[in-house]
Length: 204
Image (cartoon, rainbow, N blue to C red):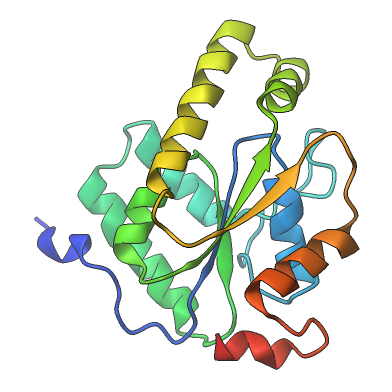
């Protein structure tokens, strides 16, 4: 039996505060995670989920974390076990002392749990108009329209509640197509990063 008490405490000694990208499916979170990884050299995972027809450039979501979260979400892993393996994962990535982060699928089921483990992460919430997310999920993923509507509305409401008093950046994707350069500029201005000097990330 594993002692579960220690799992409910955050990890206090963080050399690099991690970045967390949150957003409903089809909202643009993969784009933001890709920009953090490629433009800002923030390591978003050692083994990233690859591209497919729904995300031609890739998901930029750590494959091991995705598998771990999915196992917990489907009831195949208990909460104490999830906390145990998540702490091991975090400590492993933190030990390298380089800027790092991750994109969290399953919004908003895991954000509150990560906030209980990580002190003051840098959070970017990706927001897209409900009608656009709903249309994209129904047409791309072939989801049932009514079930899709309830799921998206529930996730958005819960995410707003979790982040209500948590400092974070909001990036919007609506009708107008946004360039990587524009989004990178918005991120650098919000977090006061010198995009031409990656060392500024290490001092945050």
